[in-house]
Image 1: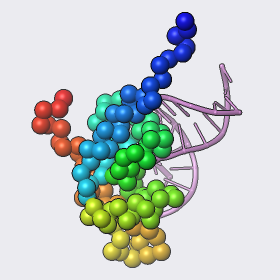
Image 2: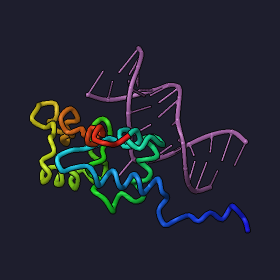
Image 3: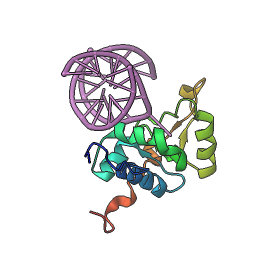
Length: 121
DNA sequence: AGCGTGACGAGTA
DNA sequence: ATACTCGCCACGC
C-alpha cells in the first residue's frame, strides 16, 4: 500500500473548517479571507480563497470578502443583492463611487467572529 | 526541479 | 485614489 494514496476525503478538513466559519457569519456582517484564516489559526488568506473558490458555492460566500471590500468580479450583482437583503453596510453614497460599484463598508460590516471571547480559545 | 497563477493582505510611492 | 512590490501557501504545467 502506498501512503501516496491519501484518503482525500470528499472535503479536506481545512476546507470544511473554512466553510463552517462562513456559515457562522451572521447576516449583515462579513469577514475577510485573512480574518477567517486568522480565526482558524491556520493557513492564509489565499488558502481560504482557494477553498471558497472551490466549495464556496455551498455556503453564504458573499459574507467572505476581500479586505478592500471590493465585490467579487463576476458576482458583483449577485453579491450586491445578498448584501441588500442582509442589510450589509455598503459604501455607495458618495461621489467617489460614481461610476463604480459599491463596496462593503468594512469599518462597519467587519465581524470579529463573535469576539471569540465567549469560550473559544 | 523551477515557474506562473490565484475568490489575498499589507506596505510603499 | 491608483500602481507596484513582497510575503504567503497550494496547485498545475
